[in-house]
Length: 127
Image (tube, rainbow, N blue to C red; front, top):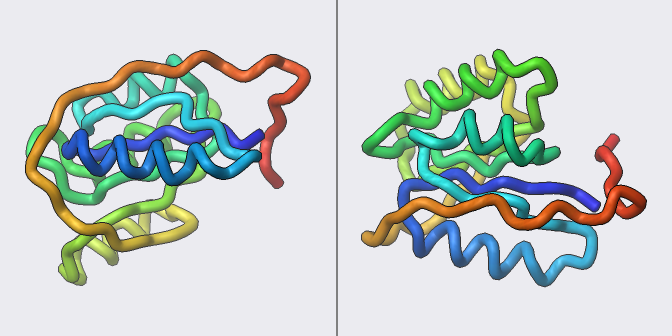
């Protein structure tokens, strides 16, 4: 089971990604939150992968990426963006995330909680 956290300032985006990823039998979305809560949420929920918005109003994704990379066991990170700003993409790539994806912006926001962890026997770390 791949444990995923979604970090985005837009609640609708987080809900949509949670719904889409929830259809995959080998993915468990264990958390979703905004940028300001991202590092603590990842520390608490221990996802294998973080889907991270690169531009958020409270704490930008590049700052969150640096915080995640400083963790003792940092997760893999895929950056999400609707922006085509070369300096943001270059800075994100220097932070070494494994992927960059695009998404459509929305207007609502709030913060989520950790979902229950899967049973220990079902948990594994991706290669």
